[in-house]
Amino acid sequence: MNESIVPLEKRVPAPRQDNQDQTLFGQTPSQTVGPFFHYGLPWKGGADLVGNSDLGARPELFPAEHYVLGRGAVRTNPEGERIEIIGIVRDAAGEPVPDAMVEIWQADARGRYPDKDDRLAGNEFCGFGRSATSDEGEFRFLTIKPGRVPGPRGTFQAPHIAMSVFARGVLARLATRLYFEGSDGLADDPVLACVPAERRETLVATPVDTGKWRFDINLGGSGETAFFAL
Image (cartoon, rainbow, N blue to C red; front, side):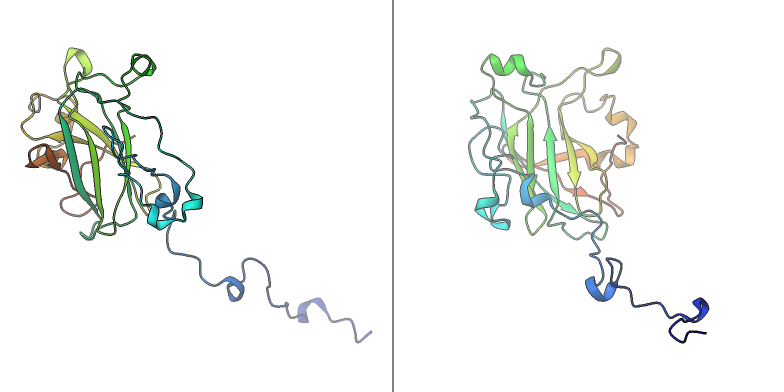
């Protein structure tokens, strides 16, 4: 028998040196999907729907040369009551989430959602915004208070803002709503009526000053915000 030939059953496998070898690359990161939100999704002015401030993005978290989104169209002065919305995104343990992103979508003061015809007519209220959260989990929007929009079966919904939350480990966006404490139509809003009575308060923003509303978002825990299935 040729001594250079080793029987198959006695061969010792060579050490792995491929992309599955932990000695080469170590343990993979624990985050499920990033987070990557602060890198480019929010943009300067994205959280200011009524002015031209830089509110929305956190440009200190990425180099200026990587910022390619720009500011978007110049906005006119939309009619309606100008408001400020502030809040904190917290996880199930009650800790702030510093790497989340919040989106809003809303009607204008007359209860109309923006469309191409409105923009052609000179109404540049876009109704859509994005805000990154700060290191303390805070987000902030400048917008107008929306009017009531039609609901199912001839009803009217209470003034509200649709909100989406993106955060670490969240594989699909979390959709919720912001209602305004004391607004007309809260008692018979057809969508709010679908939420268990004991959880409806998690969807209602409270006034903290003239034109300023607070709406905290809890991703879990005993005070978890009510989220809607998509």
